[in-house]
Length: 290
Ligand code: SAM
Image (cartoon, rainbow, N blue to C red; front, side):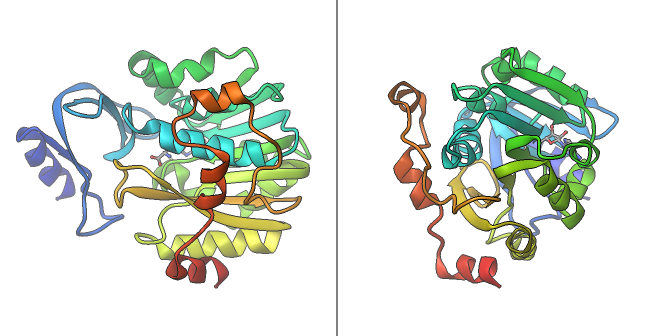
């Protein structure tokens, strides 16, 4: 039913993100044409040319990024944990087949190696072809690509990483395991002392139950944990949460000054935004403290 409705909207020149994950609400984006469509082993992959937001990547009917506003999500998911760590050298990125997190993480001179674990090779291929400004992260020689389920990969790592960033799709389809406690146990073991994790934390408005659960898991497993919010106009609800946790001190403030050249290249992250992103309205604070 949802797919039929979506097709109907497409005929009228609109892509609507109609999905049972957020019943009764949908982001709609005017589209000129579908540039690519294929089913990989794991998911349906579509690329659209939108009228106002550049090209758009959609997986299983859910918007992953548009060229116009991807910077907000990618900058915050990368720079929040990397700036909260005093000297991040070894980084693991799980998911994130578009390359945007790698692009941002690679801006830090302290980083010596970036392992990248994505389950679906086809997303990387499509992103390289249609989103070169995001996928440029793959050109960094510090990147080592592993095509594998992140849940399996992380269990082979012991005390390996200073920062782990989980840029997962939603907890339906291949990303499901990445929202469960065993995966977070694996993340903890894979961190070096003082290490930090940062995961896609869904929305306090749309999915309070997931926010509550991830908060409980991270609070129990880690020394410090905190939820942040980032504005992303093309995600349903106009925002998404970021779940962070650390084996070291609190990560709600940057641990080091930001390089001036790096700051000049960023459009969303700043040390002020870092601190402000962790200020939650009372209803969301209640969820993360429940
Ligand atoms: N934050 C974005 C969003 O939710 O809109 C996520 C973008 S990124 C394209 C998500 C990536 O996670 C996809 O490329 C998908 O293939 C990958 N992914 C999903 N489950 C995974 C798993 N179990 N292991 C590794 N990568 C996974």
